[in-house]
Image 1 (tube, rainbow, N blue to C red):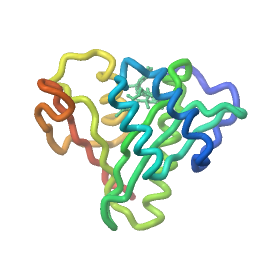
Image 2: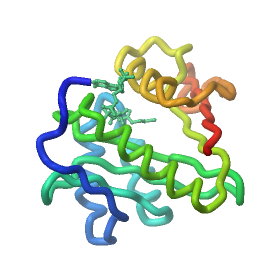
Image 3: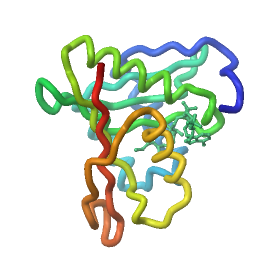
Length: 159
Ligand SMILES: CC(C)(COP(=O)(O)OP(=O)(O)OC[C@H]1O[C@@H](n2cnc3c(N)ncnc32)[C@H](O)[C@@H]1OP(=O)(O)O)[C@@H](O)C(=O)NCCC(=O)NCCS
């Protein structure tokens, strides 16, 4: 980790009026979220709950999630503004959803990301983020995102 964030990091549910801010934040992460993903992220924001992380009044992080069933929650999208990567903010967002889900009796948290079978450097750190926080590989779906672009499904047991 580089250092501590400059101001207290607050996490709360997204307000409906804030979806445009999340849209812009996701667009700024273009190495990770191509334009077609942005459309799906916008749709997800209309359908699923989203947590936001704020430094002062600025939204610098988001996490969209859903309940798959009584036991399993899924992180659909997560992002931290580029200037603030590596400061522990993503870990705090993740802790927050893990605690909230554990309180509901949810025992598994699932997330998908670009697979290690695809040679694309930016996602190596993303996989490290999840692995270092207790996620284990559940499997790979070949050609999931596009032809030759596989997804890795990860799961973490909560509690
Ligand atoms: C993945 C992401 C949410 C992690 O949030 P973060 O605030 O940067 O992560 P933290 O500071 O809490 O944790 C740092 C860890 O994440 C990893 N990491 C990911 N991106 C990193 C970066 N740019 N700089 C430093 N560490 C990074 C490191 O492996 C580090 O691991 P370690 O603490 O075990 O050494 C964030 O980097 C991000 O928004 N990435 C782009 C969007 C994305 O890929 N989202 C996930 C799609 S599945």
